[in-house]
Image (cartoon, rainbow, N blue to C red; front, side):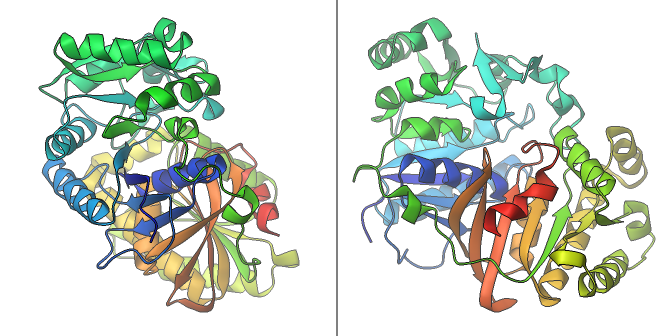
Length: 427
């Protein structure tokens, strides 16, 4: 294997494909693993993305998994480490972004890193340390209703400072606008003042590209996927057509959606309004012992056997914030989430056993559960459907001949017609 320029640790599976997508677009040859591999990597790569399911687990567990991923990446020869989290900085006052960053800094022996979840192509921008989602401040966006990580403060310096004992500072837009030299000088000034982490403003792709040279020598980067577009592979840009090519897509089509984000709610509604076949998973029925997964699979099997023009079927637990809160109040946040994840993972495995070979999964936690249920160990990154969402291809013991085309969609990403147009990209 070629020495990896970049070793990446992603805190959920959709975030990992989001990062891998941007790296491929920049010219990196990327391998994405599902979890930490048991043995050495046996593929040519400029970047390796290790997908964890650590965003919302206890902070100590997230730290332990991230350190194990770091150790494996270092054994593969990774020089720089990239800790990838969500572009909406999904976390609580207890973590997990701060604790994982602290642990990685300690392990790498570094005294400085940056924090930059900006992804302007998906309308995630940072100005004076405040994170915007489109035209709204983070705490005024749909993220204020997130069932696991409600974001109630848009000031990332404050949010991160609550999660770490290290001092957090800011590299603002005026410095970023002056380019890499000014950013490097600002980093030196902050370090001299005892600052160990700095949120960095970015309102455009040009900002992300200008900061790339200034970040190239930092042992650790922490960011969303946007920062990746300012980085360059050691071998120079690869042939992008080859980097993003996948085998021809075949087989039946399906969508599994567990995200309750505003964007995914809109996508589910648009799919149903267009006449799409859909089955709603009811968490209260799950709690009562109803085999909802079996019912969903029976519905899907009947539809897919007679679907016109290979139309996809949708199985969803997506709901509006008020409905989610009612279920959580009745069942508890953790139990409600586990019941839905387990059911959707069972559905995903069953759909593939029914012949589905093109599968969209919406939601980070849902994607993690489904990918694990399908025993997928590695993904090959293909063409972009929407910013942050590529089609991927993976071998799976449940799809042994053709393998499986997968799109793991962050809940917040994609246009309203995503579920009705995504399959056209690999048609």
